[in-house]
Amino acid sequence: MSYARNYQVFPKLSSKKIVILSVVSLALFILTWLILSELKIVPKIILPSPIIVLNKFIGVIKSGYADKSLYEHLGISLFRVFASLFIAIIFAIPLGIFVAVNDYVRGILDPFIEFYRPLPPLAYLPLIIIWFGIGEMSKIILITLAIFAPIFLNTRAGVLSIPQERIRAALCLGASKWQLITSVIFPSSLYHIFTGIRIGIGFGWTTLVAAEMVAANSGLGHMVLTASEFLVTEVVLIGIFIIGIIAILTDLFMRYLTKKFIHWHR
Amino acid sequence: MINLNNVNLQYENTATLALENVNLKIQPKEFVVILGASGCGKTSLLNLIAGFLFTDNGDITINDHQVKGPGLDRGVVFQKNALMPWLNVEENIGFGLKLRGVSKEERTKEITKVLEWVDLTEFRNNYVYELSGGMQQRVGIARALVANPEILLMDEPLGALDAITRQDIQKVVLSLWQKTQKTILMITHSIEEALFMANKLIIMTPRPGKIHKTYDVDFSKQYLEGVDAGEIKRSQKFVNLKNEILEIIEATS
Image (cartoon, rainbow over all chains, first blue to last red; front, side, top):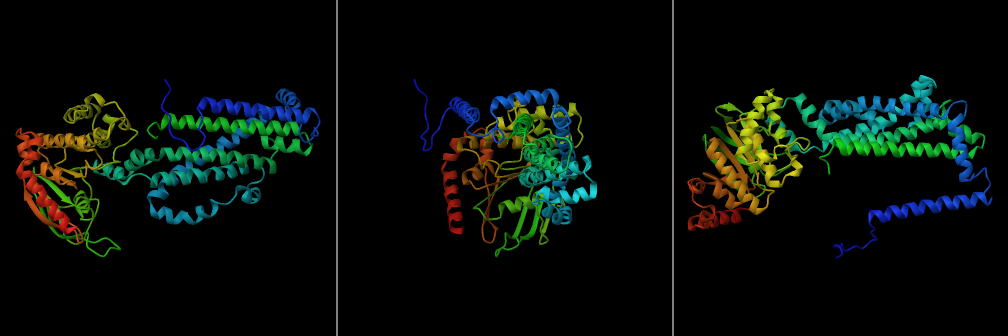
């Protein structure tokens, strides 16, 4: 017996079929790439063949690139992003909560946050370099600022979306102002906070690579930029691939954490 | 005793009074139900008593003390959204006790007692999103009762439930009223529910919101004395009264 089916206007596939389709699509892409490069339809400098890229990848893993091992590049990039993420979380969550619950705090902070928030981080990178030099400090400050905004804004949105009844119920049950924040407002906002962190990691990663291209002598962004200056296109491709894979993995991890810790959100 | 004396309430940017000259006395152990169409001010009235809302025009006292905000003497049951979704049933019910530093043993004892009252003992470890709407409301009622408040304020507690669940919970609330001897103030827009549950039924009318008429009814008493709920609701007296109130509401809204 066949199963019930919904009336559909747009094409729908089973999730298994979607995966098969994706695999086929990816295989066709690599095949096209292989043909274009191996038959020299596109010059090697523009598009090296996947085989060359793979060999170079093994070479970079073994002996590094641009004076540093791949792990050093990777490690310093990860350190910059996650140290910044940590600092941003420490500031953004409490500030997001206080701006949402206290109109004094809101009135005082609003003009600054509203101005800086839509600024592209690279627009104030020169200023940060003037103030803090080109060391680790300035990169961490830049990335922290990039990550802060989405976490802060999502925390605030989370607090503002708490149903009034929930707050009132807690007050009737004897919650103090501080208990209200820790026992109702913070847990109620967790889903939004996690979303903010997810977006923040994305922003941070973007900003990191850009910052490493402007002012750094290590990191994945620096590696890619150096390779492009010497037209080593295969290393550029490798760098982009690694950056992409890490972004996907961290996002999957965040989604896993969200599902695990915010089980009630559906 | 809850006492409202010449209470007027005006919201900003509205033309008519939300409440006009409301006088109301609620004696201990009464089950007062406020019935009215939307916009009649019934929720505003409950919020004033709960301490969520203030007016400078008129006096609201509980046992001769001015209402200055929410307090443990008044438990509130909301229509929806008031439970903590990250806590299970037991933790939700014990939420207030925990905030106030009641010991774990004492909490468990109290929670076990009210869980039995609302017949949720076997669901104590479930999360609230795993429960049906009616069960969630019973958790809300249990949470309000566990603090042993003198007064229970219920803001359309059954408004979001289907008709059959609603009737079940009406009976649960009535038996809890009998068991705990609380003063209850409940709001509803269902005439049948109001008639069945109240011992004092207040009809409010909108624009401006005011008390139109008060009835003393005894259907809940009959039910608690063992008369079948369906029989009560089908009785001539019940039906006549229901029609009379319907006419009032239709004529004034």
